[in-house]
Image (tube, rainbow, N blue to C red; front, side):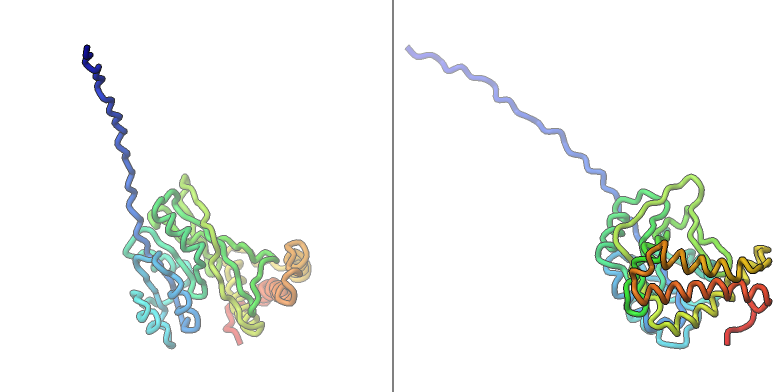
Length: 279
């Protein structure tokens, strides 16, 4: 006797279709302002890798090879007379082709980790602006103490949600109220001063500008407190409290010259020489 085999319908398991949210990569303009930066700009541009969809250099009529080097690296160069750091950076930001901007200085270099972090931000943009950390090279020494590291700056931003603000020297990127900021991983290598002489020379220029800033703010009153105690505190704070001594001679040099800078700023303000041209 034969029995018919009982047949069961085969169960077919249908998997739910996966839906991927394809977020378009944000196109990015890398923006740099320059003036006579032939010693730095090539190193900066070479380290951009594939993060830049546009490289824009706004140059203040350099008389060295800056513009030539920029064009060799495929940068678009716009020349504009320098009226101040805030004005020049806002001008450069507005000249960019894309709304998302990475603003760099000519003496800054992206590391591999920072480039990767920027790529991730481009693929998943979540904030109005992102801060990066700067690791500064001072006379051949990487400075990690004394208040010089991580030296975070808002540099990657959506230009529709903020702008550069400040007076003459201490410019900063300010995000509109109600919008968030994030932080990038990795460092931008900042090649600042290659010699003590260069640092002191720049100090003379910058202290004239900062003295002028205080005068514009109506803070022209100068006492012995400003001329004596504030420079001493500047040295003590950077060299001792912020562990500048751990950076050896570089840390000591930075602390001493920074204290001198505080004195010069107030001395120039008191004597009314902040507008005098540097010697």
